Image 1 (cartoon, rainbow, N blue to C red):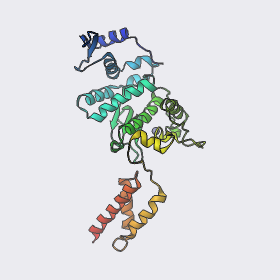
Image 2 (tube, rainbow, N blue to C red):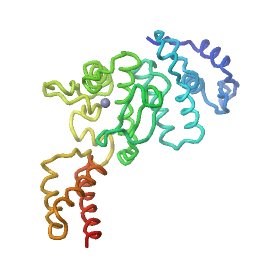
Image 3 (tube, rainbow, N blue to C red):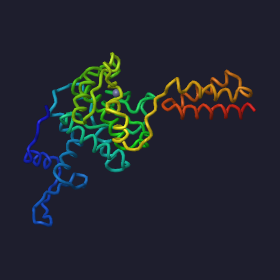
Image 4 (cartoon, rainbow, N blue to C red):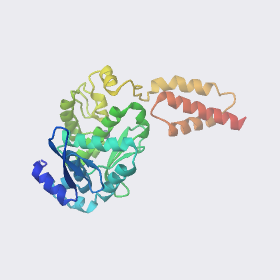
Length: 302
Ligand SMILES: [Zn+2]
């Protein structure tokens, strides 16, 4: 469990780390503290403490010693956080705040300095992804699909929360559940623990028979009691569509049918494959992509 510091301890640690404090008198003559970070930003002690946690990774002290972690380095994460604070857009800055809020509320502040990138995940179907170590040696990396901005901030925050549960499984539980593609019993138990705070339904391990419960692989979106509740929470955003062969089939054959006199079948199939590579997460957009590919083909063969 993470150690809770008293205000006096926090003050001492902040001063030791190069933060400065000023006592300012507000309108009602109540003295208040204004902290300044080493790079010149100011705020209350909670703000300064959060900054210190991020930049110096003090949460490491509270965790069990782990040799691989000691040598892995979070320098990249620290540099990334500094860069985002200095020059990043609004969204990555908001997500850093959200990471801290969730870390305190649901993870006992045990998750390490974040590495949250707004960039496409590996799978074209995924909303985000998590890797415990990527090819550059970057540990505990979260990626969030940029196009999700159209779904609204609350939706993106929930993608982040999902990926933070993966980080919890790796960093704290030391169980990545690879045989479950990450969504095993450990992952699911943590989702359900958080769901109780959020008033969401319980979820079940995705590859098992789900006992009628929703799938943890799509938690927390899958855990809303009704679709209306989800739409109400996330705002009036377009519904998340999943690719369904049933829906896709007729539209696809219609698209190919309309080009059959000008394009031979082999070429048409190549166009379909090209469109699939380009777009697979939304049936409507997929059909549009296929139609575009077919039209291009028609122009070049005409
Ligand atoms: Zn996942």
